[in-house]
Length: 142
Image (cartoon, rainbow, N blue to C red; front, side):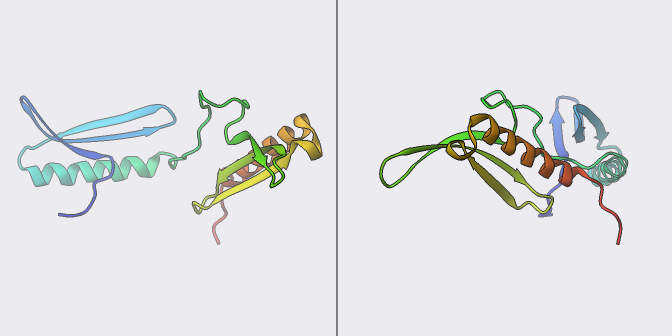
């Protein structure tokens, strides 16, 4: 039995022996326990069935952070950085990064020297928000 059981763990503690299914969506946790009665294998089958039915009725899992405590720009996915040229000159920039629906990483940078601090940050925020909105937009069936 080398397969992974996503959202399902074995729970053996004191008088309870069985499987625990735990799913979290949008801050709400869905938990159910399945006792080894009559058998351990039957309890696992019930747990897998419940997990699959619950996942089918819940919205898909999104790995998009809404806030991050160490963020200093005030926008998730937007950072301020400084590059050093070969001559040793410091070039500040704002960059926006995101992951698309296929899991590919994207990044765009905007120079503070070229656009100014406010405009560079505004452009980075705008492109990040557009990319996230595009990813969250429901796709049509083909």
